[in-house]
Image (cartoon, rainbow, N blue to C red; front, side, top):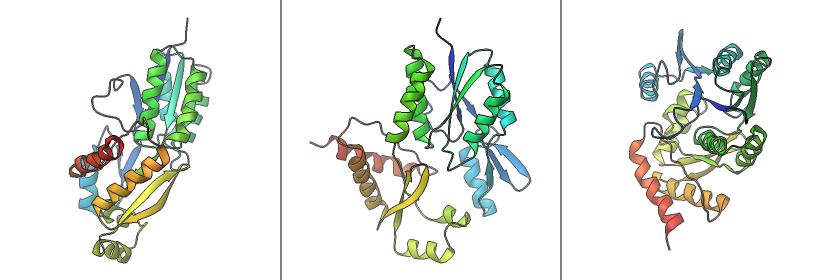
Length: 255
């Protein structure tokens, strides 16, 4: 009888509300700390509430990964349902989440087999991995085969970012007020790429529209003609989704 395999991700993983595996993938929340107040992402605070609180308080909160004990508690709970747990997490260069998951796995090693995996990605990148892992589980794949496939996806996934403005990066201390003013005055839109697990400022465009076009061209250059899986993720910028989607569709489906 094949092992029962479960999948765990952390709350930095993004997937659609109507994702067919939404109720089968288990999410452990990251911690967000506004001063003395501790919130579990997606449990105690929504994304909209997070950004509203940042704007009200004027600073970016500290974040921290779930503790090894929190991971161990979740793994123990899931041990009743699964023989093997594949735990997919935000890249280790961006967060200590993967390391915490690995320590939690050691704590329950005599109770359930947990296979932590450093995605080297985040957001929809981990979402794509979780989706493919679930498809493979339903097809009867062995845990080792799933991890091998995850390693392939880890090298192929590309993540591109472009902030609408530098309000939040400036609050984080990564950009000075003067630099933010100059960028805003010149209507410069930076383009950031998640490369080898690290966020790298790669290109610049002179408008939001040009940033979408440049990002799309960079995607096609890196990913080829297709077929490809694409996801558009926004943080409080729903008005940007449709224009960016149209640029991508015109690039990949124009004849």
